Image (cartoon, rainbow, N blue to C red):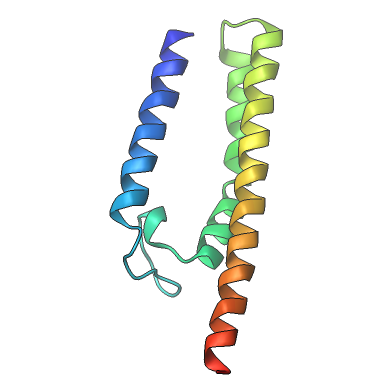
Length: 108
């Protein structure tokens, strides 16, 4: 259980650092880029959708291969689903907001 906390903690620190580094950089909307943080919100939304099968696979691996209790497995899988859904909604809202802001800039 401590290993899960360490992985989550390290992931949050890395995500925060990467977000700060790429905050004001130009975002990629066409072509390939490996870094999620360099993508436009439209591309982030698409990449998040593509990760749905990985969510199911991760849930299955956690449920069947872990030594944790069923209740703890269910909690972890539920948290994965909540985080995934939140990220999907967030990137969609930001995509549409940035699209409308860009549309307003072109019509001024």
